[in-house]
Structures are given as structure tokens and as C-alpha cells.
Length: 463
Image (cartoon, rainbow, N blue to C red; front, side, top):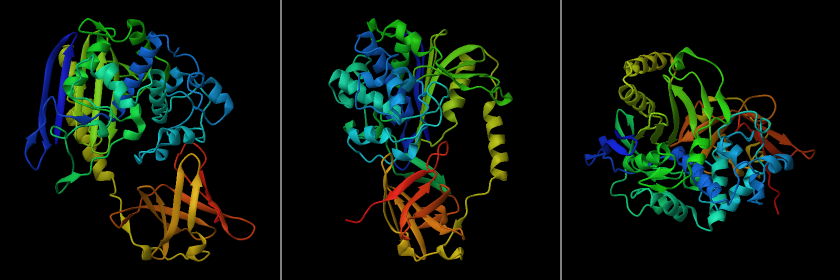
């Protein structure tokens, strides 16, 4: 529906402009000052905050987090003891995303997520594998709050938004005073339909910030100029260089499809690559209905911001690449046609997810419905409820609803998403119930995180 773009070169703003609509119904246009959720681009602010604390000798980024935040605990004492701030910033703790454990924006107190973190199983040893993890950036936010004795919204405003003249940026949707220039989001289903706005306020630096193309241009200028903005030193040049130095390999396989960027590494919250011979630092973000990217080329002093109100938009990659081609006098490649052809090809092969009805599966339950029902709990994920649904079962986990169909022998069920009373053929995978020696359900497992063993939810005892 709309896109906002900014381009900077050293200290100069070359372009800041909006295209398309922020409010389609009222025909209100996107501008360079339209406010967008920037989702995971927020993570670069965690890097900035840790850099500032490091510059002020409050922390050392190569020291364990637990040393500064004793309530931070991971799955094992050994992992807790050795996981450093750098490990969290570079997604190299060995703990995978476990995204279902935070994705519902439930506005829990921070202590709830800190407690959950210690129960999330790792899938690799520390330092050995890149695994994107938003939870760890929540932890860094809490650490920043402790170091500066300020809440998240006040902290980012004081440390970054104010000195960088980011006058239309906010730490969370709750901090947004009004929505006069906030963009709405749409989905195209025969026509443009308004979608509900979902935020990531719970995750703080993991994805809560809202900003504009103009404001984020200032953020990139600071990084391009070695931590300086308008003769104010916000971060040290030593830290800004360290942040864009590789810590761990993200992609280690060469691909013809990625010939323009033959490698991808991770620095301190910045993805690092070489775009057609130009060193590139960038981050992207996506939250339901919005996509964003911030990119800078440190040795060319060029920065690019792209914000859209489209879900999983290809524009956040197409636009920066096109702008880079122009800025560096490279032969412009028609990636748009390539993308459209590939999308057309994939669409022709794809089978749209079908729908089913509770009566469409005739396999009988081994026991009566009520035998499986009850309240269940996992300390890393929280509570789940299983209730009857027609002649099947319904699993309710915050906003997630899954209809469970028996698979025949045993106590295994296929899961199917339920939205607007429509049951999808797709789900989260197989769910298996376990029984105790008295013939009562004691627990079930669900594959919420594919890189570890299925998550066990234990039945709560009835008092």
C-alpha cells in the first residue's frame, strides 16, 4: 500500500520521501515522517545501548550477562555462567528462537519472560551456531534499564531519540501519544482489507520501536560517522567499528541466487555482507502487516531506510539494492522482473491451504473427549487449555487456537489452525498425549520449536 524511503550520504540527507497510502480508505499518503513499527530493526538500538554502556565503563561486552544481571539464567548453569553480552547481540548463545513463548504481546511483567528464559532448551553449544533469538534482546533491554535505572521508553528517548533529533520515534506503541501520522496495514483479498495492528511491545529492543524514514536516517548517519551526529559523539568510533565486525557466520553455503552477496555474517546486532564488492551492514524487520530495513555501507558512507505497511514485503530488499546500484554506478539489475517471475512460478506450484470440518475426519478418539481436557503448563511457555470442540479437541494457547484430530492408534493428534471459525489443513504438527498409571492424561507434547525436542506441557493438578 505504501513505502517510505530515506537515503543519506555522510552528513547529508539525499532523499526522504513517501509513496502510496498510509490510510487507503481516507486516501492519506505516506510521507517521510509517517510512523511505522520497525520490528526487529529495533535490535540495532540494543547494540547502541550496550555500546554506550561499554563506552561509559558500566559493562564489558565480552563479559557474562549474569555478572551484571543476576536474574538472567539460561537452561544450564554452565550456559548461564559463560553467555556474554556479545553472544546475545550476535545470536550465538545456542538457544533457538522459541518464538511461540513470546509472540502474543501479552504485556506481562518483565520478570515473567526472564523466568521463562531459563526453561528454553538450547539446540547447539555456545558460540557454535547462529540462531536468531529475539528473547535475548529483551534481556539486553532489561540490562540497560538496570544499568541506567530508567524504563525502556524513557531510556531510548534520552539516549538516542533526543540527541539524534528522532522527534517522531517511540519506544513502544504504548508511548505513541496519538496516531495522526501512523500508518495502517492492509491485506489484499479481492480488495484491500484493513488488518488489525499488532505490536511487539513485550520484547522491548527485540522489536518494540516505532519510527520514521527521516528519523532512522539520523540513526544511520550516526553509525556511518563513527558514532557522531552533528558533532555530538553518541557512541565511540571503537564500538561502532566493533559492532560491524563479524562475530559468527550466518550463511556458510554459496548460492547462485545470492551471487551479489556471497556471504552473510553477524556482528553485534548487524548482519554483515559484501554487496557487489561494497561492505554492507543491515537489519530487517517484520511484524504482522509491516516490513522494514535499515542498511548502511560504512566504507562508502551511504545509508538507506525502507519502511512499508506490507507484510513480508520484498521492497525492503529490492529498494535498497536498486538504490545501491545507482549510488555506486553499478549496472542496474532488473530484480523486480526476476522476483515476479519466480513468484508466478511458485504460485502456480503452490497449493492453497485447504479447510476442513470437524466431521471430515472419522477416526474415533481412543477415550471420551473429557479424558483429554484440562489445564496444562510449561514453565518456558506458560499455560495451555484443552477443551472439547464439536466432536474433536480444541487447544487454546493465548491467541493461538488449534483443532486436534485423532490420528488413529495411540493418543496422537494432528493440529489445525482455527481462525474465524475456519479450520485450516495446516497446523503446528503432531500432538501426543501421555497417560499415567491410573489411566489419566499427565501431559502432552507439541513441536513449538522444531530445533529441539517437542515441548512438554504437564497437566495441572486439580486442587
